[in-house]
Length: 245
Image 1: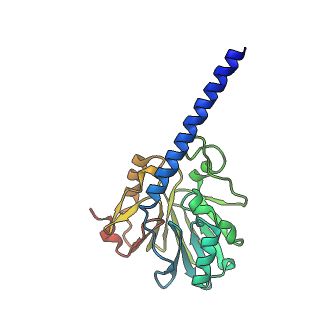
Image 2: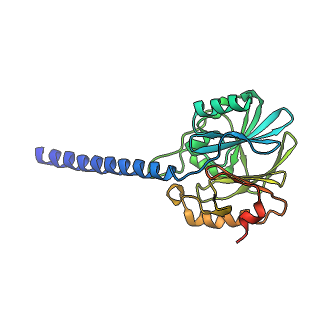
Image 3: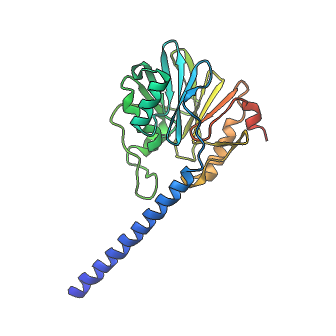
């Protein structure tokens, strides 16, 4: 019996050791890849669009009247609070948050906006209800507040803004971009910008990079689009040039 117990303990020790080594490797690799991200600084981008740089990610505010629709929820509460002070934006003036997906760096600060209604794609719900892990056995955290689910190409109106959700699976199964007033395209982690051109997002963070590459094609034929706003790689003010090959 003692021999069996020893073998079991040795086996458990080996598994735990492997997991620790893997966790250390993953942390080092993730930190290295995060350093490659190039978010832009907090500030006003157009007459109606503002951004907050929260560590390595941008969230965006679209103003209509005295209220705002926000794209994504930020990486940290302190980072978003500091940005709100700098932009002189009251959290209560945010009426909606459009989530491109539910990774932590896009949802960690949604509690700052207590009056905001949350939207995301129907396919992304699997990432927060325990159905689909983000990586191995690691899952995205559940929401503590209600949310609304959008279908692919569904159009909603908020604050007089026409908002179209475009499903772009790959980074996560339910990643969604938002085209506002046919002009402003918010892409989340669906793509990056390199030398003014759209490019694949960092494959280390994608759940399915090949599907993500195919999804990018859905974002290249918006006739009236002028701007692209990414979560980690800045913006383009020349949509047509950015999507041209």
